Amino acid sequence: MLLAGNRRTDPQDSVILCRFYTCAMSNAIADLRKSYERAELDESASHADPLQQFDQWLKEAITSEVPEPNAMTLATVASNLRPSTRVVLIKGYDSQGITWYTNYSSRKGQELAGNPFAALQFHWVELERVVRIEGIVEKVDAQESDAYFHTRPLDSRLGAWASPQSEVISGRGVLVANAAKYAAQFLLQPPRPPHWGGYRLKPDTWQFWQGRKSRLHDRLRYTLAADGQWLRERLAP
Ligand SMILES: Cc1cc2nc3c(=O)[nH]c(=O)nc-3n(C[C@H](O)[C@H](O)[C@H](O)COP(=O)(O)O)c2cc1C
Image (cartoon, rainbow, N blue to C red; front, top):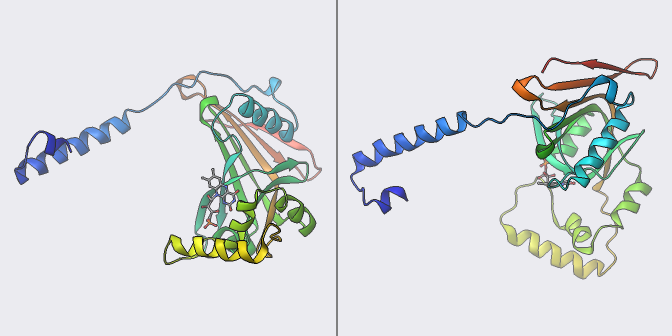
């Protein structure tokens, strides 16, 4: 666009200018940096129980009105050891673990079926905070999945039927046609699809990261010991 606006049409000029702008853009990205100075995370001021620390930080993210405070990255590893990530929404958390809902036949569902270990990550950019959680995943029981499914808006319930999540489809029309088909079939009462439900990750490791000045960030890791106690340690940033 710049070239067109300046009427620079010589192909050689274009190549040179493109190289220049690409180079300028790369430098701009390399120069992007920010000093983190909002808060600190100290052993004496953090909770001994990581679930309480998480509860406090998630509530602070919600009250701070950061965008989508409930969005977390879920990492799974396929049986060929290839990792993959995607964003899902947390739907519950307690001493049993952290819950989200999805399609059991999706890529993540298939990877979890082969390898139940997974990791979650929240990044609350405006608060300069990250929480990382690792553990083993199991399916939520059917009654709990049913109960949650029936709280979802009708469109979302039909969407769970309409989308063969992670599969290649020939076009958007497939989804629209599927949604219409299931709307006609189920009217206002779609049942929970058998391929859709919850997962719960039971944490054995938590990590809380608070950005600090001069890249001397605070990192506290909590590891579950054999006696059920949480070991809290500071990691170098
Ligand atoms: C903010 C946000 C929230 C999302 N929440 C969910 C969710 O709760 N469950 C879900 O299955 N997909 C959710 N998605 C879509 C997933 O990121 C992903 O595209 C989908 O689950 C397929 O992933 P997979 O092919 O790796 O299994 C969300 C995406 C975004 C951007």
